[in-house]
Image 1 (cartoon, helix red, strand yellow):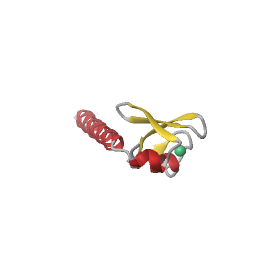
Image 2 (cartoon, rainbow, N blue to C red):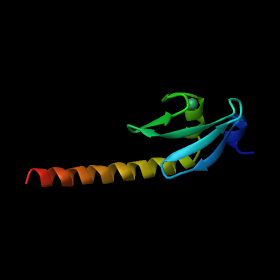
Image 3 (cartoon, helix red, strand yellow):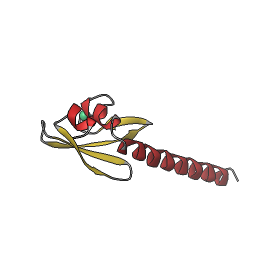
Image 4 (cartoon, rainbow, N blue to C red):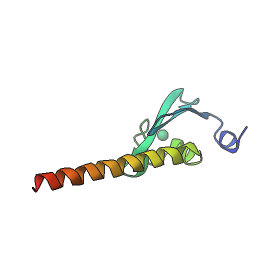
Length: 90
Ligand SMILES: [Zn+2]
């Protein structure tokens, strides 16, 4: 048992997608989608930036990976926006 699962024994990591961390809350018997919204960690289940799932997610190394993917996508969108603005202004 690692540190995280000792600390929140009713939660576990179900999967990691490109920009989402999927947890499972055994207490509520529900899966929990954690992602970044406006550069802040967001829990879709609680519609919150501050809940026990977020505390759990912050302690997992997987969240760092998701943050990196999120930032990469933000930068790509920003570049795309700048290109389109340049195109629009002639
Ligand atoms: Zn939550």
